[in-house]
Amino acid sequence: MPLNVVIAINEKPIESITIGRLEEFKGANYWHHYRIVSGDEQAEFMHLYRNGAQECLRRGLEALANKREKESRE
Image 1 (cartoon, rainbow, N blue to C red):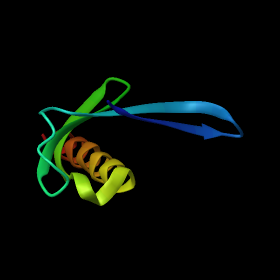
Image 2 (cartoon, rainbow, N blue to C red):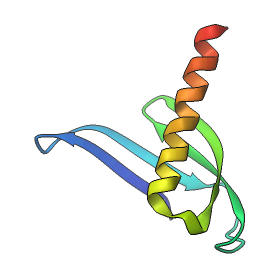
Image 3 (cartoon, rainbow, N blue to C red):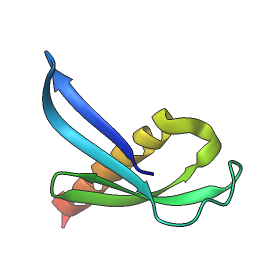
Image 4 (cartoon, rainbow, N blue to C red):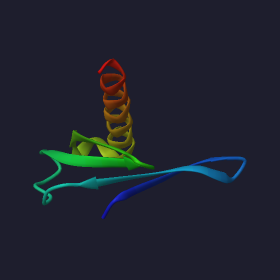
């Protein structure tokens, strides 16, 4: 089941982000491979399931930011 996040200003949605696990669940104490999708952008990252949804979102946003930075240098 994917993690869906909607960012809104004054209750008006401006962004929708989806994060999904790319492999079967191995357990809370294992690192899992995820993909974050925001509009036309996407990136992959690793997340320790037991660290929760907020940390998953933080890692995903960091993966997108790192991908943007890398692409801007190329």
